[in-house]
Length: 115
Ligand SMILES: [Zn+2]
Image (cartoon, rainbow, N blue to C red; front, side, top):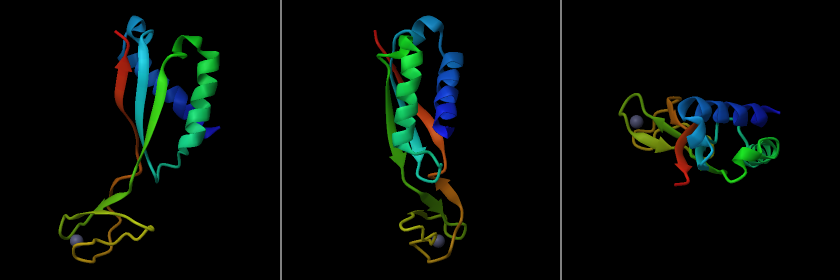
């Protein structure tokens, strides 16, 4: 399952970033998932639940997933547009644009630890 490897890579990233004793106090992981990232938040939660069952040290660490909307930036006028219904058109000048600046990524934007 695609989401299982994503959970594994999130956890590996955190384990590289933080000391073992700090990871033992991990409380919350906040990730942003772009709607074009091919990641299904529900499946990501399921994969994380499965991860917690095999890694009891992380039972108290909660995964928070926020979906980010799709945004393009116009090459002509630099205006940023929220894409609706997959219409990749600048709302300012009407030019078509494929310059996606948000919505394709998956990123860890916050990590919380217990004191
Ligand atoms: Zn424009």
